[in-house]
Amino acid sequence: MLSYGSPRVRKELKSRGIKVSLPTVAKIMRENGIKAITVQKFKPPATTGSNHNETISPNLLDQNFNIKTQNTVFVTGITYIPYVFLFLYLCDFKDLYTKKIVGRAVDTHIKTTLVMRAFENAVNNQKPNKGLIIHADRGSQYASKEFREELSSKGFIQSMSRKGNF
Image 1 (cartoon, rainbow, N blue to C red):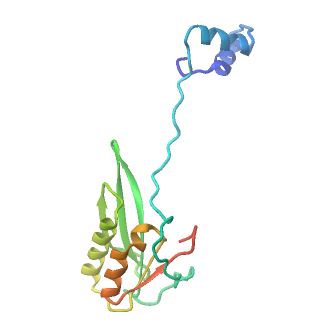
Image 2: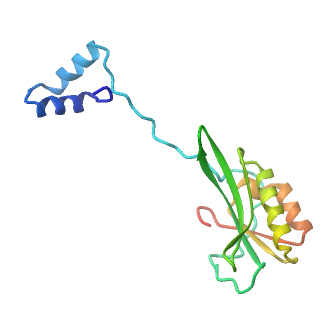
Image 3: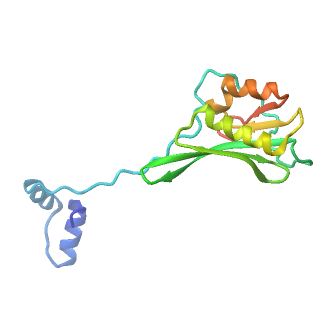
């Protein structure tokens, strides 16, 4: 009964045939220093920091995920993996035609370097031609100058989803 609050204690007492009011139970618990143990609700880490001043690219896909050829559109995202006492962050790139992951990276942080490593893996694995569309959310990692310049240097085109959507 250590985690019980006064309503639950009263309910338990009532089930045992003991009649007592809720204020009385609360008073007795307070006088004896008995408090319910509360568990904090889990709040997952944010993986998209879209509140930034970086440039937002147009949404070239506009929900059209029916791609006809390989290495024409890669989509990318970041997710977290709870691990012991920390979170690991996974960034992957997926070819929309083959539906296969073509590049990924894992780290304990969610910085642009995570995205850059996953992107480098995808490019090295697939060797796509110029004109490849890279579609992502509006996260600061994807909107960063470093990532945008890397795409541009390879002749790739950036696409970003509208707010609140992939």
